Amino acid sequence: MQDEKRRILVGRVAGLYGVKGWLKIVSYTRPPENIFIYSPWLIKQDDIWLETEVQEGKVHGKGLIVALEGIAERDVARGLIGTDIGIYRSQLQALPPGEYYWDDLRGLQVINRQGRVLGKLKEILETGANDVLVVEGEGRHLIPLIWDMYVMGVDQTKGIIEVDWEPEK
Image: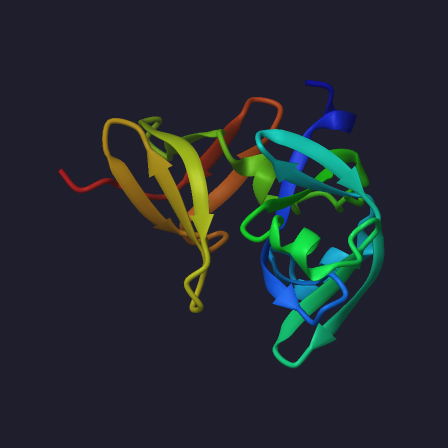
């Protein structure tokens, strides 16, 4: 798939708000309200991604609510509960050298300093104290995402994340 059409998950529809089709959403962006920077959104329904424009989005209490183009009734909005929200990869801004979007790291091969392949990065977990790399290969490894202590570098060209990590035997 071409990069400009590659989809990135940025959130999901969590519930309804009011009677005019507004939706409660969970954002995967940091900070959460950055999800409103992007439009159009891609909403996944029945394994099909549909493009929709954000009419208005705002912080409401401790959550986020949004009005989407073409959704003006609660009953129509109800059908979106639980659906994923995506954007095109091309909508993300370029990052300075040494900074990465999590999605760009998923699937990279993780190798320790001794040259041992630990597996591929499946996901990154937010734990509060620090994020954790979930690496799956011959086994499953949980590696703290602490730069220059456990994560030594990323080479996206070679598809490698180098870590200072010795798996338990």
